[in-house]
Image (cartoon, rainbow, N blue to C red):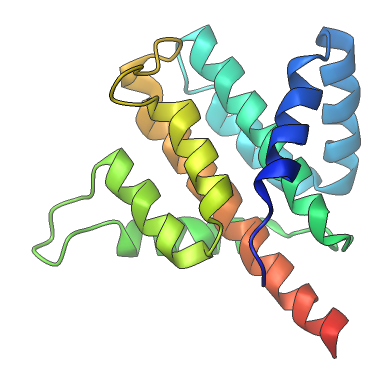
Length: 172
């Protein structure tokens, strides 16, 4: 499966950055109808985030990621809770160094980048969450980053795994 082009990701980012609150609610409603189970789980985890800036950043990343996966032009069937929780179990299993120590949030994202073959999307996500060495992210709370990373990893794993199944079907 080819990587989502950077232009697609930038267009999604631009689109959502210009929406007002009602526009965001409308898009969220559309996405909820398309993938209600993902949205329910995602919204449940968002309640655990304390800082409003981190919630907003998480929501914007969700919008951009979900919209970016529409690049493939494949309408996914409704993803069941089970698939999302399988991604969570995989995350818990593989989110450790060989010595058993847990990976840092950044290490988790870098590992996922290798797994997904979505370099542009992962670079975008990591830049939005962590910033750069010259310009670290200031609009998120460091205490909430772990939850945010977990949500993004689960979303990316779930969408990527499901899309791969259907991209293969489309080729056959």
